[in-house]
Length: 47
Image (cartoon, rainbow, N blue to C red; front, side, top):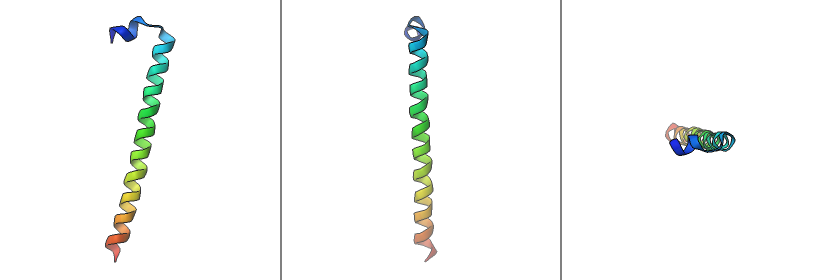
């Protein structure tokens, strides 16, 4: 954490933004995956 604060503020903000962006993409992908699995299971067990 100290290494992050000692560096340039702009680069540390950029790295934080990149990490948050990847986390956001991961959660969106996880949400789409769970919705599609739920739909597939509904179609399978409806019969």
